Length: 546
Image (cartoon, rainbow, N blue to C red; front, side):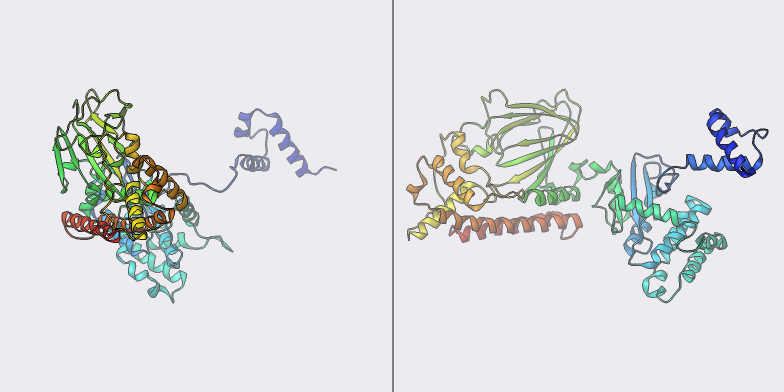
């Protein structure tokens, strides 16, 4: 026998299956009774409820002001972290207002679990946000940061959660907010781990910073990418220098006004060793050191638009990676020139002119974001004629010849080891004449050693490669020189140790630039180059070439 309730459920199910979709939302009173309408709406709610966890109804974070700028700076901060306090007080103390309408500052909560009270502090700030809005949140957060030490571990160790909540509400009351309403938001909403009215918002904030890979505070993102260069110790003028231009060019544009050694040649301004002056380039060099495990340096070049020849054809004694930052520049790459009286790795410099270049091996226009590799010894010239400009590019120089990391120095060191092993007198390096050599023969020993990149060849393979290259270089078998594999192994060990010392010196050098340590920039550069040259002298001394 069917009950009245059963008939009601049956009628509801029939209505769901037979009525047009629009009727389900109208629920006409003449068709359903009150109980049936409630059952229908519950069924609709279950049917339309999204699967998975709750999601926020608005973007994460608390903006300083209405979005309007092209640059977004996200501050991931912990209200119990003293370093976060430094950064927040600087930004809220004037930096954010100075860049209003240009830069969007957004606060993100990061609860650090080793401070239990950190959760309560962030909950209180979120309660203020939900009750009184964005401006109130920033006002309360600044006030809370000013009293941050009152909530340090040693101050709250013997206090209960409820007591800490009350003290946080008092801070809100002092700023003109209703402390009773805030306490109501912080009160538990049920049994077990039900949490309070802002628990879900704190969960979203935690999930968000974990997905972004943020684990320490403060952490700063600029336009979606982490900006590791930003420090909690930055003063307003350092923030201004960083934000006055688009962040990716903040350390490059205006290079001619930077206090470093710049030169102006043929409408091109360039700064050698700019990584020793500009933190952004120092960071690039540190990344290159970690990646390539090879000594490096960064130069910057800015060329005016419509310049037919911005830099005449020349060769360099290092491998170069070119990063085009702004504007466009045409690059023409030529085969290495014939080898004569002038150093093949310094052609086109110091009054020398490269002629009869022939057809370029590569003729390409670099646009922002493009990267070009130019091997050592290959001629190259640049131009901005008929291109958008001005042009700004960075060169990352991977030096081998000047730091003794070429096959030629390994061969010279191996000759010495062989002569000493035989009890013979050793000359200072080997003195093979290069004039008239083919490029294949010349480059056999001038090439960089296969070290670095995390893919180093086995010593036996390097020994075998050297002996093959030396045969081409000398025009005869290395055995004529009496060099044995054991001599090469001994020389290679010296050069490996030398390379590690160079890398350590350069890591310290660029780290000091990033951190703003050391003396006046030019004095700092001189001191570091002196240390690098001293290491070269140590190598020569170990080889008996002093």
